Image 1 (tube, rainbow, N blue to C red):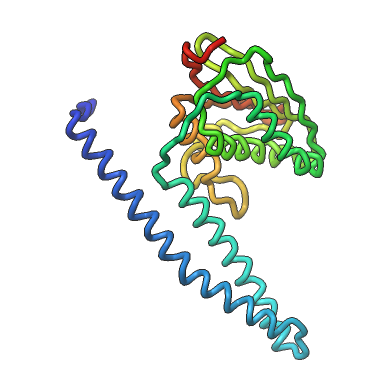
Image 2: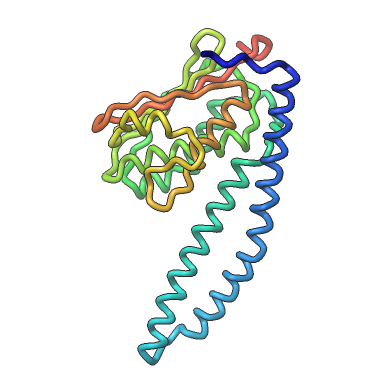
Amino acid sequence: MLKPEPTSDQYERLIAQYAEMAQLAGALAHEIKNPLSTIRLNMELLAEDLAEPLTPAQRRAAKRIDVMQRECQRLQDLLDDFLNFAKIRKLHRQSTDLNAEIAETLDFFAPEAAAANVEIIRYLDPDLPRVMLDAEAFRSALINLLLNAKQAMPKGGQLVVRTTTVGGNVVIHLIDTGIGIDDYTAAHMFEAFFSTKPGGSGLGLPTTIKIIEAHGGRIHVQSQVGRGTQFTIELPAPPRLSG
């Protein structure tokens, strides 16, 4: 039996409840960061005290401190990713040259790609319409996808970045020659905290899709294991900005 669709009042209450839960979760994460900072500081002081361990006991203690420092850093990264995901984002959109934003982000990412033996190939349509964009938020989403593509090519490869127009939308394709994504992962990869990477927060792609959808766009993925992956982003190009 199908459940009835929520009424507008019920929908508004659900939105308000979600906003309240997101606010509480963000506040909790901030509260956790305060004692975590104290723990990290004391771990650093202990590590300095044991920088040159002399006895077996001191060497064991130094190794345990190193493990705790790594775990503290992992928790810090997780909290930072969560706060970025959970915050209610208010976009400051302006008429933007999307190609220029992509080119600037690729230039920033180029040294990391080169170090991983990843060749970036650009096909940016010179006649691309302008879009309404929050450049900072969009750059964060694009970096997440670039990092994802790089990690999918552990032995190097090629990443094609292409822009074009389809109907009333501006389209960005990111095509890598990596290991590909299986059907199960593809079905869950945009869910919060889902990750196939050891130590990953599972919030990079969910944050990316939130940013794209906040721009009125959408993102989808096509992949074949052993052949590579294509992420496609579609953003609306308002008629008044086209041309």
